Length: 117
Image (cartoon, rainbow, N blue to C red; front, side, top):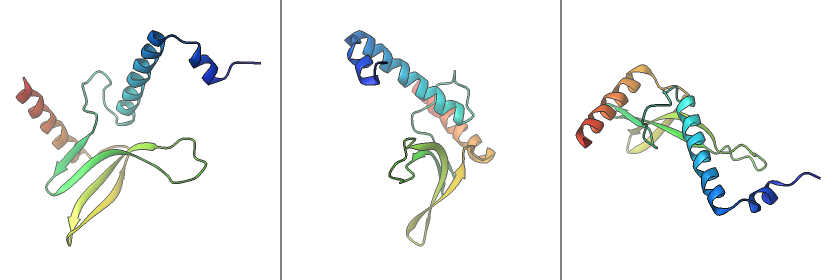
């Protein structure tokens, strides 16, 4: 009978577990970059956000709420947030960010990177 996932993990040393966790983190980051349509080699922040005027665009993962869902969280997807009559409103945008918002995000990111240097 094949070993279960738990049995395999128990057989690994602490060093092997640490290496496996590091690989998992790099793969998840690369997957987020790929889904966002970004170049994997670029140094992207963990939380992506862009603002155009009073609208804020955020790249987020979401939970579907289904009891037996084994793929949660889903995404990441872009959402737009704004204030309207004192309430925060949001709207789903999709997997790719509109070009105007993307240009704004890239300009702010470039400015932040040059300021840190």
